[in-house]
Image 1 (cartoon, rainbow, N blue to C red):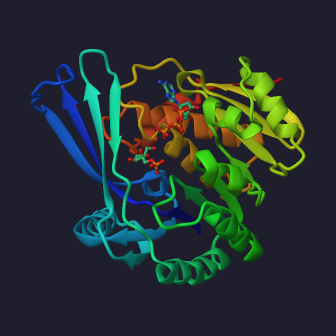
Image 2: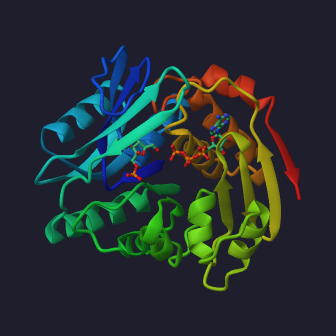
Amino acid sequence: MITTVTLNAAIDKTYYVPLFTQDSVMRVQRFYAEAGGKGINVARVISQLGKSVLATGFVGGFNGRFIRQELDRQRIQHDFVEVAGESRLCLNIINESDGGSTEILEPGPVISDEAMEQFGEKLKMLAKRSIVVCFSGSLPAGVPKDFYAVLVSMAKREGAIVLLDTSGEALLRGAEAAPFMIKPNEQEAAQLIGETLSNGLEIMKRLATLERMDIPCITVSLGSEGSLVYFQGAYYRVQPPLIDAVNTVGCGDSFMAGMAVCIAEGKSIEESLSYATAVGSANALNEKAGYVNKVDVDELLKLVQIERL
Ligand SMILES: Nc1ncnc2c1ncn2[C@@H]1O[C@H](COP(=O)(O)OP(=O)(O)OP(=O)(O)O)[C@@H](O)[C@H]1O
Ligand SMILES: O=P(O)(O)OC[C@@]1(O)O[C@H](CO)[C@@H](O)[C@@H]1O
């Protein structure tokens, strides 16, 4: 089984407006409301790829009930810790005139010590049954900055392969617990090494050789440019096909879903990266965030290019 963890779950609302203009009244043409937050997106995409997955984390309030109901409707197994307060609402406004996207993300509920303890117990039990545990997204308020580091170590002790996709200090601290894979974007990678380098490959190489970083797989994702990857001493560049992107929010989560599926099935790094790249690109073809069509994935996979550097 694959388990995905979303500590800061959300209702993701995607608004399509003809022209996004600041300081104006805008009428929404089409909109979607989905169970979201990065780990939940990962779970949904894994399920759309036809694989078994369970989503866990914290949910609360009316929004939390909506999230559980949506997961039930989509037949995705879940086991969340209920918390006081409301799970957040995250807005993604797509400007149809140029395809640009503006995200407005609420902070989410404050997590109590008791809820954190309860979650730790749940995670131990789930990680024991999981081949892969994938942690994704920002930390909610109340949670210590090293919470991912604690959870990553816990899941590893239970025998799971751990993937971590987060940012800022949560990533800096979480990376120290040596998950199997991290997926920073270029800016986050630069933050990890503590300096700005203009060349993606330079960033990648510096990152991979940091002594405190004992991570077998580091993927620096570059949007439509694909990704630069370090895996056990080797470097790769992966190039997605050229597509007409509709909504790129959730591409990173879809990439993580592809990696989780392949790692759980023991696929080679080349196969895993190619597949994950196709899954990431397939998400961009969809109006909803964290949604893929398996037929698109299979077609795009034929066009992904991977080279060992
Ligand atoms: N416009 C695009 N065209 C083709 N493939 C894309 C595009 N955008 C993203 N992808 C694919 O998805 C992968 C992950 O995307 P990206 O680098 O945008 O992740 P991210 O910044 O973590 O996204 P998010 O946080 O919104 O989920 C890329 O490496 C690439 O393979
Ligand atoms: O605040 P976080 O957890 O970093 O990001 C949350 C979020 O922007 O990420 C997803 C897209 O990747 C959206 O579903 C969600 O709203």
